[in-house]
Picture 1 (cartoon, rainbow, N blue to C red):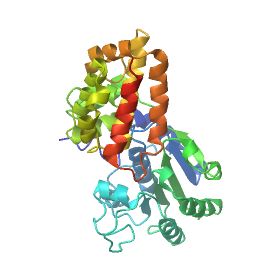
Picture 2: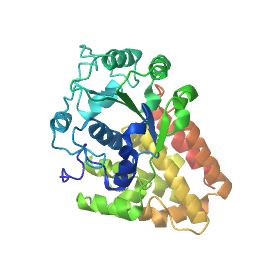
Picture 3: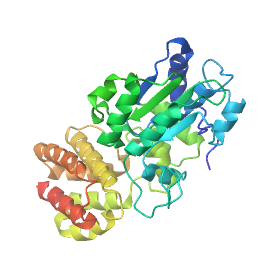
Amino acid sequence: MADSELIDSQRFLPWQQEIAQRWLRDRARFAHAWLIHGPGGIGKVHFARAAAASLLCENPNEGVACTECQACLWFRHGNHPDFRAVRPDAVALTEGTLDPEENESGESTRKTPSREIRIEQVRGLEAWAHTATHRGGQRVALIYPGYTLNPYAANALLKLLEEPPPGTVFLLVVDALDSLLPTLVSRCRRLPLPMPAPQEASAWLQALGVDSPDARLAAAGGAPMQAWRTYEAGHEVVPGWLTAIARSLGRGVLSKEAPTLATELEKQAPAEWLEALQRLLVDIRLAQAGCAVRYYPKLDEVTRAIARRFSVTAAAEGFRWLTQQRGVATHPLNPRLFAHMVLIHLGTLAS
C-alpha cells in the first residue's frame, strides 16, 4: 500500500511543490478563475485539490496548507462547506464519492451515470457561490475534467465567470485548452503544469513500492499518476493483449488472429487500448529510425520485427488513422466489432 503522506490530497506532489509555492505566494493578485492544464496523468486534479486546501487553509505556510487547522481537517474529511468539486457522475462514482444509485444532486436514479457535467450542476454551483462563506474566508470550486462540460453547462459557467461572485476561486482542470470554448478559456488565467523529470517521477513511484517503476513510467508516457493507477489496478507493465497484438504483427498474422484478439480488447475501454496501440506505433517509428523505443522497452525485440514489416509511410498512416478512431471511441459502438475492425486495418498495413 502507498505511504499516505506521499499521496495526501492536501499535499502537492514532489514535482508540483515549487510551482505551487510560487503560484500561491501572492494572494493579493490572485485571479478568480484558473485554468490548470497540461499532459494527462501528471496529477493535475491532485494539484487542484491541494491548491483548494491551501486556499481554504487558515494558517498557510508559504501559501501551502498547514494540514492541521480546522479548515484543513474539514477538507481532509471531505466536508468543508466552502469547497465544491464538480465532475461527471461517472467520475464521482469511480472515485467512490457517489452512491451507484444517486447522482451528484443526491437524487435516486438507476440510469447509467452521466459522463458529462450537466447544467444543473453548474446552476447548483452558482447558488452555492452566492451564499456567505462559513468562516468568512474564500470559497473554492473545482471543476474537472473541463472537456466534459456539455454545451449548456459550459455556457452557464461562462456567465458565472463573467460576473464572478466575490471571494470565490474557480479551478478548472483540463488536458488540452482546445477542448474548451475559447470564450471560457479567455475568462481564466492559465497555469500550465509540465511533465515531471523522469528521475523524480521514478523515485516517487519507487517510494510507493511500485514494481518496475521505470518500465511503468515509460509505458505511461512519463506520466507518474497514470503509472501509479495501472499499478494500483493490478495491471501488468505491458498488458498481455498488447503483447499478443505485437507478436501477431511481428509474424504478419494479425488479420488472421483479429477475431480472437478482439475478444480481449472488448474487455478494455476503447480509448485505453487505442492509446496503447498508438504508443506501439510510435515505438515502431523509432525502431525504423534506429532509435531506442520510448514506451515499451520490454517489447523491443518484437517491435523491431514489426518495424521491418511496416513501411515508414504505413506506420505514420496507422498512427494518424488510430487518432481518428479515438474521436469515435466514446460513441455507442459494438466493442468487439470496433476492435476487430481496428485490428484488421492494422494487419493490412504490414507488408
